[in-house]
Length: 367
Length: 222
Image 1 (cartoon, rainbow over the protein chains, first blue to last red):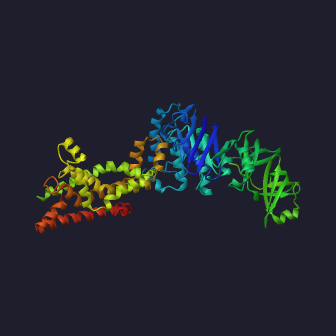
Image 2 (image 1 turned 90 degrees about the vertical axis):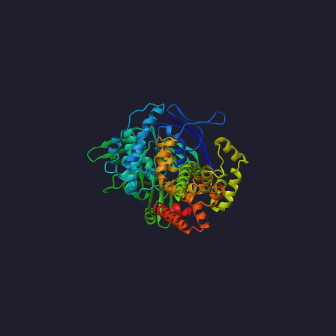
Image 3 (image 1 turned 90 degrees about the horizontal axis):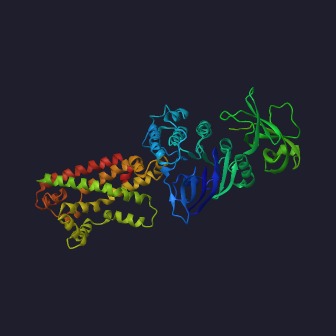
């Protein structure tokens, strides 16, 4: 769908990406300064780029040493770019910002050669992003979350065939993130637009994206499914990880409608999680669980009479200790799980590598 | 009659401001956003009229405008009129003399507005002209007001350059500032007082306008 083979050189930085990005939501993951935003800008046509970009058979960029360079201007590419800083126009009110995109999308549609699937109406975005009360407001009087919603609505009104989201949850506190997250699901699910989702938070990636690119130092390190990508990041890029979370991948095996639980198979063992508010998970679907190591307790025997429902059997791979804590890595099948317990507890349990233990998952989140 | 001088002065200031709005916009944009090595040199040349004595500018312009010089000769052949001691000569001289008063506030505004709004406009489907007219222009409006007011006012206050280039021909080059000079020379203090008073009041009102609409941009120039 989106074919990339690009080279982008800045003063002290070079980005080299060659891959083909398909439908669905693809994460662009990497540490800060790894070239994630530059990649989006290159795709949108905002920065001079070498190489080749084509989307659904239409060439957007063809600039190599041999051929005469061709770069289609950004205003002709059916791309919706959501900037990290929202970048609403200060001289227009909310409706003015939305109309700016809406009126120009009509002229752009006829300019591009790719047929439009379905038109996104002003009414639809106002409804989805809960904007009726905000339309006449000046953008200066919007909260951070409101600004982001208006920016998302404006991006959609360009009738994009490719969405580029640059860290849409950055700069928001936890409460605002929870406010925005459902809208992000709506963005990718309701409109079914292929999306590149830039993030340096693995939690977000596992919650929102089916596929994943890992970029570090301007190079593409990995492109595949999210659960493979998370394992790759844990194994290869430990020093570049920006999270202390531990991840487990499971496949959906069923739903418990009485208690609103989703049943997962994690390395042959059963795990129950609360059903997602946003997603209908199908049997067989791969999902990634985000676990805080401090929420993973350990027991020497299969515990009885506790409220915790998720217990996984595993073998201790590694123990590293600090003054107060012991960080323990467990092998759960092919996967690893990290647990943080107090040093006193670790000593009392006489934990050593190779020992089989039971990990109690106090809570597990899934978007 | 001094009304002619006032009318001529307002006409010169208006024409100069209009032309500089058109010429100054691309120049200020380039100065605000270019990464070229030439930029500091062009910026310095643009600011030269701020620091040079008006008589120096007037002297060089007089030489350039003279029909013996290619520029003056070309103008004479093209229009049938000389650039020296004519209204069109005054306009050209004012364009040069007032250039920094248009370009510097605009440059500051463009730099402050930044390139981001243009990028957004492009990704929302706006072509370059559309983006400039509907995004950059409204976002830079206060800078445009400051730049226009300063240019207009500064052109009205010109003396040295217009005296050297234009002389004192009633209805053609006799501006208010030159009229005042002549009234003082001929000891006609009453008329000098009247015209000077008008200019003082005008300058105060203009500056009051500038400082109350866009304090920051004005401070950078004055």
